[in-house]
Image (cartoon, rainbow, N blue to C red; front, side, top):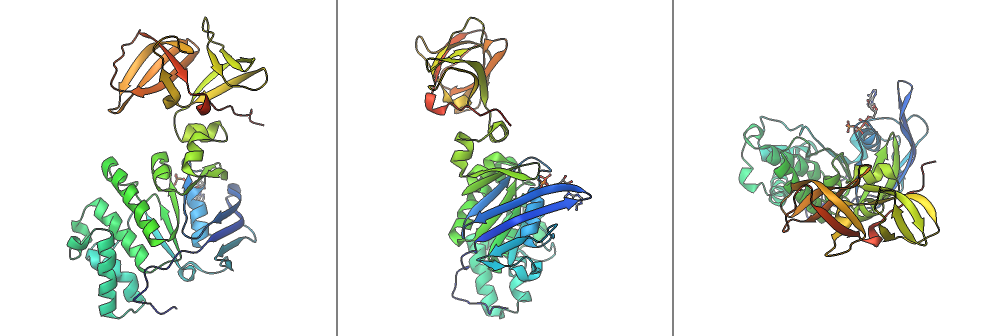
Amino acid sequence: MNSPNPTAAVRNGSSITTRGLTKTFNGHRVLQPTDLEIAAGEILVLLGPSGCGKTTLLRLIAGLEQSDGPDMIRFDGEDVSAVPIEKRDVGMVFQSYALFPNMTVAENVGYGLKIRKMPRAQREEETKRLLALVGLEEYAGRRISAVSGGQRQRTALARALAIKPRVLLLDEPLAALDAVLRERLRVEIGLLLREFGITAVYVTHDQAEAMAIGDRIAVMQRGRIVQIDAPREIYHRPINDFVADFVGTMNRVRGSVRAGALILDAGETTARIAVGGPDRETTLCFRPEAARLAVDGGAVRARIRATTFFGATQRLVAEVSPECQLQLDLPSNQSFVPGQIISFDIDPAAILEFKPES
Ligand SMILES: Nc1ncnc2c1ncn2[C@@H]1O[C@H](COP(=O)(O)OP(=O)(O)OP(=O)(O)O)[C@@H](O)[C@H]1O
């Protein structure tokens, strides 16, 4: 075991490489061969619907699960495939905090250091530093059973960081918390992980959490990574319908492109939206916020069916024709009523067109 170094901040994380990681349960392949390159210090979020294989991939990286065949997992180039979990030097944070309820917050944070036989004075100093980092100094002496869910989750994070792992794995760490706390902690956790320079793999099915925390997001579907990219790319340049719909609302309009302009298949409407390219029949996609209300004579006319007020913005359900209902997000300072006719344009740079799925 490495001797603890009292002067070092948590050392920077390791890069992670996987090749051909595959997992089958009861004859059912839940993880297709997966190759990943995660840079040292990067936060990679695994995002996808329930059952898509996120936790399985995380457990394989941790060493809690063995891959089907000869697989390869490297930390900083070192093959750890055959290294058992306790020697892999990974920290883990779960949805259920797995803390010791009868110990204090400080005892929980220092537990791993005690097991590693760090001298008491040094252990206390290190624990204090970590508690300060996660904003829990005042609660050091409280029992876990007497602190809130958010404070427990921060204790769990500090405990995982205390042992200076080369890799931190987090599985839905905020899922048990209420919405307000979840929103605050996802910002705090992102900042903390970056401050530590640790490499982290973070599992969630919440797209807003993924966007806030990840340097990159790997979107998974049925046991495979379908797109891996920066959050902005995933949101604005999804590679297919599944990714587009999983990370936000997407409008779809069918029509024909003639001389570089879209003619909608929408009753009397002959909206002209400049999209370029050859003449074709197609479906174009755009997010609700790509709509711009036109003062007069916008490209598309629609009748408002419903409005929902969100505070800063409002969402309109607008009917271009009975077959074409769109969701539009507009600033909330102007009020609309159902039945009203509006006219709007669509930012051409925000229009996407997916190739038909093969
Ligand atoms: N130990 C196991 N034995 C049998 N099947 C399993 C086992 N662990 C996971 N599975 C199955 O593998 C698939 C992937 O599960 P996994 O937990 O990786 O999904 P997930 O994306 O993390 O889902 P969730 O968001 O619901 O946790 C699921 O169909 C699950 O039922």
